[in-house]
Image (tube, rainbow, N blue to C red):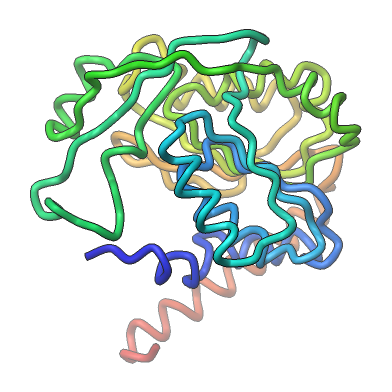
Length: 264
């Protein structure tokens, strides 16, 4: 059974990379876009203790769980918003996911079915990869452009953003307008196949990010989906990126040695 508390207390997938890129005590602003039940928001709020974590999640049942978890962990530096960041201000249909994987039926700890909701409807391709996932309901949610949000909140830059919005990632980034140049690093979900109708695919994301002066420094996308880590060339010069890659190479070599000798 998947346990929420164990997940919150486990290392962040890219914790090593984030610690190489940032002095964690100096990080001021983190955006967790598509925060779901706020587990990652809590993890980022712990990793970056002096930051404000802005968490965005439009699905009401996820929001309720997220608020409860934030309160139980006493995370005062998280701002939870019931907004779907997008390319326009207003309202939009939001397609709700539900269902249970066969090996996790009746799980009381973790609802995998509620983690795939999107501003985009699912495609036929989705059924080939997650036949258990259902999209039988939709609701109206409030949408807002990111550039308007940061203007309202008087935010001058975003150190790190985690974007996981099920195919709508470029809708979020296009809604940032010129403020996109004030993002320092972005970790986002990217698909290689069309799981949601008319979503951008890996090549589209990579082209967009390159055009906006971001460089991809980590890629976990497989034949279906994964994540990519981008950094802004305006904040990380070639020397800093070379240092980052050297550190990652050393770590990978050490991990290979540990694996070869059966060490932990």
